[in-house]
Length: 329
Ligand SMILES: NC(=O)c1ccc[n+]([C@@H]2O[C@H](COP(=O)([O-])OP(=O)(O)OC[C@H]3O[C@@H](n4cnc5c(N)ncnc54)[C@H](OP(=O)(O)O)[C@@H]3O)[C@@H](O)[C@H]2O)c1
Image (spheres, rainbow, N blue to C red):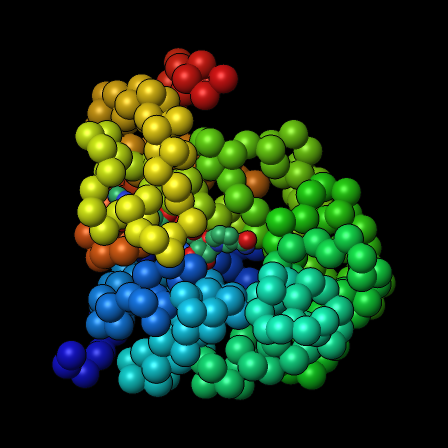
């Protein structure tokens, strides 16, 4: 690939929204590296997607220690691409990583102990070739480790300068309240909660979104397209190379079969709005100001182009909202 010079017009394409009560703004659309950037994937394809994202104003890139497969390889590949293409742009990028799921054998490579979080972030920084990450997350609540210890690890990491901000992921409303209180008492605010939220996954609407807003914590919605279900790709079956067809993906064929009637009905509404289903699914999330950013995945630049265009049309009529709710009920 030729040498990379970022698009000079990259700002002004998409908007940036303040994350909770922090000073940090995140782009409406962020890019996740859970799939498509691992050792099993085509390196130059991932590189092209990252270049395309940054050229179009996407400043936030989300990783975790275990992304791959194999675990760790997405961070390694990101590190290689960062070194080749993005080093001059480090101060324009918000790079996040996480720990909380199983990463290495033995009692110190999983869940939420200080031992695990601190050593995992050290490993992540090495793999990515970074001095610090912008956001470090605890990836999921740990029922056994005292929350005080997990939050103290996040506080320590910030004080050590290894992360600028900290966040939590997959924490429900009560867990979020507790975590935020502990962090506030230590003087390290909780920036953000990263949650699964899409038309197909609406548990957070019950009370988490309001709670986060009251606490001044941002919300970033992951798997907004339900891993590709909320797009037009499965309308006529399961295409080769799609996530549902891959042996290592996290989307199973029966999930497609179970959802296909709803997908087709939603697609009809998207068509009448003049949008692709992916665009409508993203717009549907961003219509709510409590959502700071929508965290998409993409296996091609074409998909990212499609997803970016959702930002052109974010409003819904009450009839459309009702029709969508009827389909989803
Ligand atoms: N905190 C957590 O526990 C957690 C968990 C999961 C994910 N995440 C984060 O959220 C990010 C996004 O998750 P996700 O990848 O599941 O998000 P997603 O946006 O719901 O799904 C992305 C997949 O949908 C398909 N797709 C995307 N745009 C498309 C389009 N316009 N048309 C057709 N197909 C399209 C692609 O699948 P194909 O490969 O089939 O083309 C793509 O890989 C992850 O990378 C990660 O950073 C966090």
